Length: 77
Image (cartoon, rainbow, N blue to C red; front, side):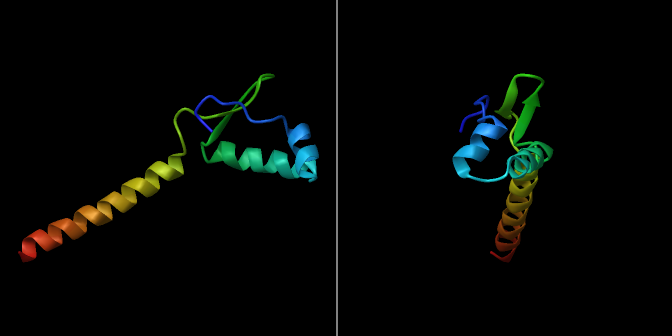
């Protein structure tokens, strides 16, 4: 999915997946809290253009670790 893409409505997705609509609503809520999707009043749920804040934090953590390793190796050389 790309930023700005609309997710299916809760009821239609629940019917398609044969699950309780509350399960889909909860999943959408968790995705919204994580910053992956955004709700637009009366317009639906869309993939966020900003992406997940958690994902950005995780990328920064990984990159910081790799930079530290690179600096340690360069000091040893």
